[in-house]
Image (cartoon, rainbow, N blue to C red; front, side, top):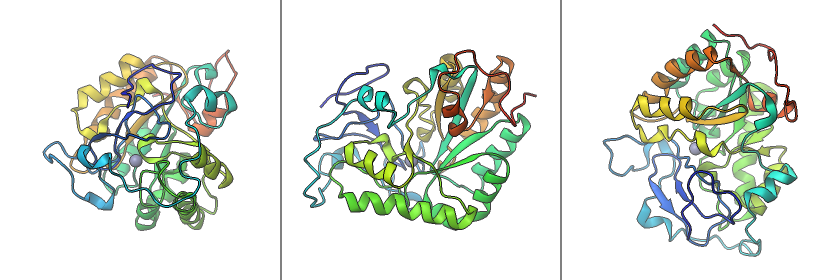
Length: 310
Ligand SMILES: [Zn+2]
């Protein structure tokens, strides 16, 4: 198995993935291609919790258990050859970032909505006219539909982050992958009237069947800039989150945050510092779909709609 960090690109990847939700790092052996660099793990993790139990109902994998993820019986599960980032990026089937987009950054928040953190993040975004993308967990969206409505009403984008936040590795059946994505499409459509057009797989795991199913459900798979994985789910302290973003900010970045991290306000406090500084540097904050529309616009953007600095 290979541990990927930072800018390694053209490898059929296995990576040390941080498990979403409360999870700790783990490495998966017969893995699908993985979003490298990063680790996305969803919330629920607290610094004081040495290992998370099923906090908030989101899945948890420990280092020890990761290698023994039970494979679901699917005749296609082992057939696909892992493809690397370049393959999917060139085909436009997965997006990590859009460096040609001009002076814009897409802030993304996974695992919500959360009745405390999401609200405060929305309040901060509003102060700066910043638009963001919330990759929501379907069952949490069902629980807090008013937050989905508010996110939408304030110009943010809702992305699909599965219904129950499992890792959709290559061991999972195609039907299981489909049902996780489709269920959240249905939930969001019932709240907003429109289904998401973006999908972010928990843990950043991707493989051929996942990509195909996601696209068939009407969602483009979106990962994140490898240099912008804040690992805020680990509650590393506000300054580490802030420094990660500010020290690495580049045009067209997709930044990975979480708006549902149990026991931590690091993300909320961090964006209170990040938003004013990046605004001062001249960045505008756009949704991922807005970012995608800017592909190829090397001259940059003057002012995306709805964006303003304070
Ligand atoms: Zn997640």
